[in-house]
Image 1 (cartoon, rainbow, N blue to C red):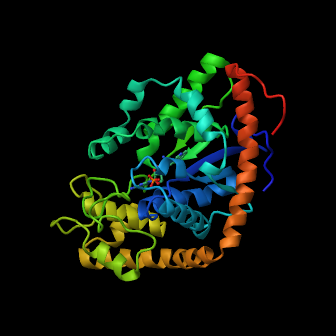
Image 2: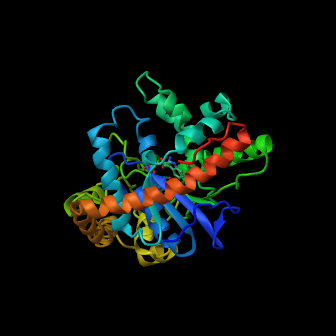
Image 3: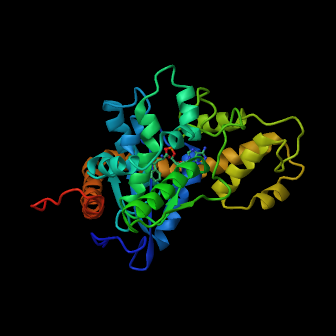
Length: 348
Ligand code: AMP
Ligand code: TRP
């Protein structure tokens, strides 16, 4: 993948928009991550210059998630990226903590953000409400680090699920604030939120999003779940007693299953509604479970294969790190210059 060090031309490179996005390597990858994020990323490689990273620095904002477990889940995440179809020949894949510049740019951007703005973030309010008393400053600062991740590569397009839209707004705001304060420099990034599966809901409570941290383990379906588990999770998913398969605000469970089915099969929701008119929930659920199994079995197999290929994975990540570091340092130098920090006498 030939990407120049200096990727700073209005968020495009070689005429293609620069795309950047990432996942936190906490626990496993669930169906929301796959349908709301990874599946779209794979398709977007065709017409973007892509950087996909593993946001391990974000992962430690959740107490107890660091250490050896993080080291393992970071490599799991890299293997999942490849298993799902991210192509290391086309795209840059790297680990956030291995590239200097993310934290440095976050510091500069943090000096432009107000505490009130951060305290109003929905995810901060949710997570700090469930923190058991301790609210880490990292949890508050997290959206600034995310803005830095994006701006460090002057990304134009950032594919995320619905839950990250507010963080993207902050990144846009900080890009504009920086431009207003130090001179026009950053491209203002756009969120790219897919349609059907931008918000996959919990299988046990379809009013809340499917999440890795769901206390009810039957609510989230992981790509690593066995076929039996997938069947059980779909079979016991919460629906309603009305008996008709259609999208409706009063039928959040069935609506969620229809969205999942559509995301997995590529069929439109209306085509599925038509196909399943008059069919019972039991059959509908069995068909969804089969479709999920068919889709993710090859991904799971590729994952296990790649996870055993430690050297190959390490090489992909090292190649990604070198490329990303080149982009990051060249951009950070320009930012430091605009901010008024002294120039270094020697090049690193
Ligand atoms: P996270 O698991 O929070 O690191 O999220 C990684 C990516 O998956 C982000 O782009 C999220 O917006 C997306 N995502 C997470 N949960 C869901 C969900 N339930 N439905 C759709 N997308 C999701
Ligand atoms: N915060 C994102 C999430 O939890 C992950 C992430 C970190 C990210 N930095 C990013 C996504 C930059 C897109 C761009 O899903």
